[in-house]
Length: 579
Image 1 (cartoon, rainbow, N blue to C red):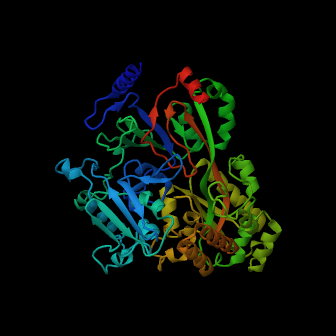
Image 2: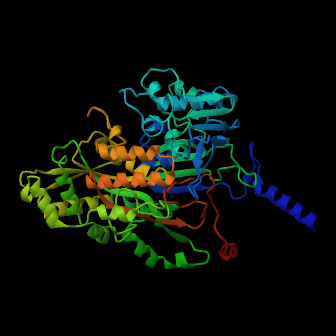
Image 3: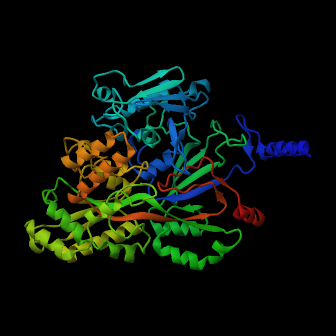
């Protein structure tokens, strides 16, 4: 009986997989996954990515030395088979895979020519540390390499021909740091550290989206709706636990649609398989109108809800003389009735109703972080105090203050919040707010150069540390000229006391003390606020149950490598629930 069982298992594995030149296909391989996105690709160069939507799409086509496990957000090897860190935390050694091919491109003359080499990694990191045509740094250099990796600054400034702290030895890559960075591996897992081909780039193919990832960039259609198409990489090197080829899906379709109600309509019509953030107004309608689809066995639809590492806020133009006065910024903070916005517009679809700071109050993610202390430094709705502070700043009842322009990206939710914000500021401070909506891409450009007075943003955590949120206000990231963009610190905020605490946190080796310094830095930030925190995201996601293995996590980190589409049978679903 035991021999028969083993033979049966082997026969099942053979039948479950169909032939592929590199690995057999799983029996459920194939199909197309579709989802709507608020915006498309802002850049094809990974080292230049600063927004969530570009990151999601490029992360399916490009990879780094390490990646995140979408189930628990832990770092795992990717283009490296393994890595080790020295006891002092200053040296990282990666053993590189030798079976990785870049996606096809005319620059390659053979399959052997497509193999990823250590030179591609060295080239990618050097490109990240190279000034652009305007002499400006990339976001990758600013957030990962600058003053962290040995020799990166000298290379960026043109004082060295190589980055001394990054070197290859056979199939190993070594990175040396100037000082310990507890989050360095997490930063290397970000799209900014993705590896591109030296040959393609040097063949004037810098705009080509050529990576090593599970999906190939196929096309951008402009028919009824702009759609970005990705297709399965038939030469992908990874396999599942059964030895079958990854990815399973044939194609990914990202439909670009910034209207949340339109996104919901596409989902209801079966034109998409997943909605990242169902509009609050649609939750009740969906639950009541299609209750059978949720309660059937197996269900057709699944509603998922979880707090996210996302903070929605407005930030001030810190070069505007009016907003250089701390009393004005505090007045605007006290003038905003966040509870009304949460109740009337967001319909309670938030994580935490109270005001804290820029770090989302998720104790499970940020253990031992003093959120209660942050809350005490925050700003509740206090119109009398707001008017008093504005008068102290020399603008009683808004006199002589003038109008302000609020820049935001157009969408159902953001437009409604902008209108309510303008109404509240007018009612409390007697200041007129001109709301100026644009595309997501245009809003980013306006913010980078501070072409406006107040700007809307939502910061998505790149890794599970307060650093990823607080770095947006680090003064040493602000360029010296207004003619240069400031993508990492868009408000161009500078506070020496905050910077000193932020730096102490980054240099601290002990995690508990690091959190204490980050906590102190955030409290200092709230005493001198360059922003108005509005709410913390808690997405309600809708997904057709046939979509399997699409993991949810606090970063909304989406990986489609092991996602497949297979409707449940009643028996299979009941067995799963019993487990």
